[in-house]
Length: 219
Ligand SMILES: NC(=O)c1ccc[n+]([C@@H]2O[C@H](COP(=O)([O-])OP(=O)(O)OC[C@H]3O[C@@H](n4cnc5c(N)ncnc54)[C@H](OP(=O)(O)O)[C@@H]3O)[C@@H](O)[C@H]2O)c1
View 1 (cartoon, protein in one colour):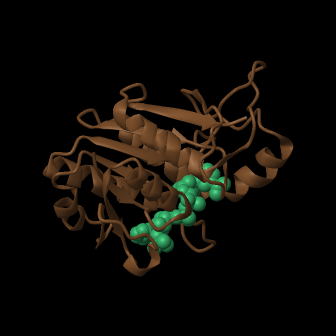
View 2 (tube, rainbow, N blue to C red; view 1 turned 120 degrees about the vertical axis):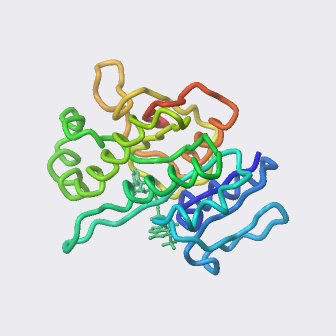
């Protein structure tokens, strides 16, 4: 398949690009800093574009089968996080103009404001308040996608990310804001970035999670 990857220079993005190339896909990495992507391959094209501009993205989207995003935006003390929703709005506009209709993107567990009430004290009272700005804007982006009927989108929600390559472990899924165990409590709290990339790529040949948000984890 022909895949355009945003956030390709990031930690998950690099796993995704490498695995996609290993699987024989043709990848266009859309980046702001081409020098940062340390991968070279005959089936990899690296282009520079502005993720907040549909005009800048659309020429690179033309002819792609699918758009995949591993973009991430940090919390700052001085401004609110808006990168997820604004970049997604540009991506969707560019997809419409370029006639691409499948996108697979990643957010996180607990984007919905009340979904963390069953998490551990540490997560609920320390981590979630610290990253609430990121989660809120991810949720805004998810709500925007919910209203996007003409595009086949999937939101992949992992828990905490570890810098590990793809494993052979089973990836557990749940349509929701975390993966529950048998008692309804969150099952596990982390997954390797390589496994997130593996799951995202597994969606290329499946319609199972189209127009859905899927929480994932390994145990
Ligand atoms: N950390 C966790 O435990 C955790 C848990 C669940 C979900 N997540 C989410 O999972 C996603 C991926 O995480 P990660 O750690 O793999 O991300 P990461 O390493 O921080 O990579 C972020 C990517 O976004 C790109 N990016 C950011 N701002 C950009 C801009 N203005 N223009 C173009 N590209 C831009 C970065 O480009 P540059 O390389 O040029 O900076 C980089 O490629 C993030 O959304 C993160 O919030 C993280």
